[in-house]
Amino acid sequence: MEALFESGTGLALLGAAFASLFAGCGSAIGCGIAGQAAAGVVTEDPSKFAKVLILELLPGTQGIYGLIIAFVTLAGIGILGGDAPTVAEGWYYFFGCLPIGFVGLISGMHQGKTAAASIGVVAKQPEQFGKSLIFPAMVETYAILALLVSILVVVSI
Image (cartoon, rainbow, N blue to C red):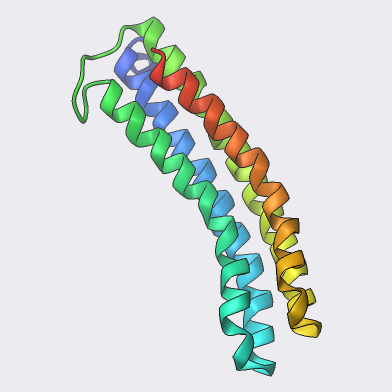
């Protein structure tokens, strides 16, 4: 484990793993929460499938954002092309990956809860789908902000 912290490549790989791991876990949890609500609605009224599917898929974006940062990091450190980073650069990559990792984890879970509540709205009032979409989209804003911070840090190294 000590060698990991003495290598720029090792630190950057750890950051890439954290970005994809944490953001992916947030998406999986969020999609699971929303998916349970969606399944209940579709059981009662299969015609609402398309609307609840859109809401159920929203928490999945955090995992995609984490994966983007992981790929950009891997490209920057020579795994997918480029030069191996110094230890200092490895720390920059590591810390640059953390915003999307942690915000992706938390926002994915909360977006799943918000999407589940919005699915409840669609179950009772399908004509309110557009309005119900705004609630989980607000949570998405913070995942996008974290993605932007991670991108700015990682691509500036």
